[in-house]
Length: 450
Image 1 (cartoon, rainbow, N blue to C red):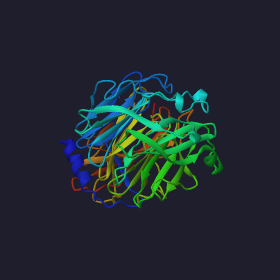
Image 2: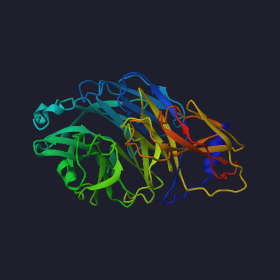
Image 3: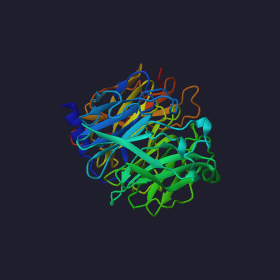
Image 4: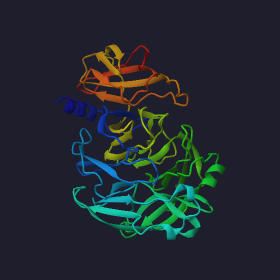
């Protein structure tokens, strides 16, 4: 009953998205806890199901393989583990994307080149079974797999890593980012396939490490993790990782000719690792990135074009750098984040801002102890916003940002697995009545998360 009320009240908030939208997050759900998890994996929405695949082996860039998977039938509120190495065995990494006809295409990586031999490895060193695809026509219940091939011209060296996510144009061509290592430098690439993922060729070089340095973004890693998405205007946008530190800037490039050529790279005022772009059905473009010392953060481009971004919306401060997301509805996402041998799910709604109703009573008596926030009130639901005041010792590079507002029908919330230990916070709590009217927020005293 409580979850029904929560969904009903949220649905009253309208659909027109403002330039600075409201981001509402439902309470954290743990998908899986186990030893061996490497990164948060990737997630895809398939009809009424969510499928999540994650690496389950040491973070040794191809020295070992293996994956785990979980499925949700209720929008991410609960998850059921699937057999390991499903739907493809012994993969270094795999993910799935939904095609225009509703099929799922899973792409699996069985081999990656040795980073110590960058510039030395050539096409003749790539094993025949380096890549695999699997197709599902029944929302991921059964799969048909086969070997895939990526052809990389000698001028780019060798594909170091194909990357999520695959997307499709209106002519059924598929596109997928990747990065390559060669004698003449490192490239972020866009691959294409015209036979449903069996054979891939290089469509274009999005940018190079040298070009990003020239644009003022020092490149300190060979892992040029890249994400590409169409924008609302029809341009294609690429976002590229440049480093591993909490201050390493992301870089953008844009194509006006469907990925054939790209603009000069542009340094963004956003830092992070493994960026992910997602164009929602309502036209909002979302960018997700994370760092273990600088939160998992969601940025929004309300007009869908990615030229201007909202402030950061923090989902959790206890996250590794490899987070993933998928569109779950016209105005919502499901985000997955890794942390300390587990993966968490966050159901995110993107709404227009709410006006304060003076006749709705604000919550009172806000307390925080041992990671649990509690308060008194008479709302149908509540919005809780943790606001970081002072980072913990050792987290000097952590940006001081508020979290996205958490929507809950309870009067207490366990935040112990998403706030920094030793950091100082205040909490803003608003009440929302059954008609969707929102109170002014009550602000707590300052608390250290011990």
